[in-house]
Length: 305
Image (cartoon, rainbow, N blue to C red; front, side, top):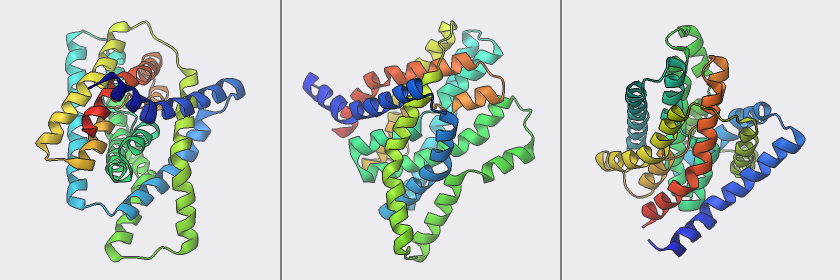
């Protein structure tokens, strides 16, 4: 693995993401753009359209998609278990422990993972990365919320929250289109193409805007544990589980890359909603995102060979 290969991989796949993210960061600092409003636009409009477009156009083999779903569920739960065990070993207090578990389990598979897979491996791998994104988003708003609320969540609220997931409906509609061979009318098809084409750039700008409100924490043990597990343990576990699940080719590239992303930015939303250690969660997201090019560049080269 030569230095020139690493440099080219970084320049062609990660640097474009950093440049657009940097533009979003500058936009947030200079114009004080509200990341919550922009995030809602991405979450409720652009993300589900992109997922629908990926599923319909690439016509995934559902057997392979099922393997990626199983892979995703397994690695998310296993990473949470690792975080819980190591956090108890380090005798972290409950707020810090919950923060570490949340930021270790859930990676930024949307506005960082999807663009990276698209740049590095193309549309075929992006389809499987989309399956990973849908699965981990579903788990975040179910298991993640349960963990954040420490068991005090109302069941009815949890169910209603699931029904508000727009990507869930995007998957259902795409499945119907594929199953029954439905022809999408030209106006709708063109609208979908326009929205899907703009989703990834908008996600990257949003990523930069979301980074403007970060405050670093003094809890270095908890921060180091979260970042270490997310950036170093997750890729190794992802490669092992991909072999165990028989995931190969584009599916392996998409799924393992997604599993190796830094902490999910949306974890800061749970922190605010459930009174977790907000500073620790924001710091874990920021530091893992800042350091991620170091580990992801090596991973992309390995997966590309």
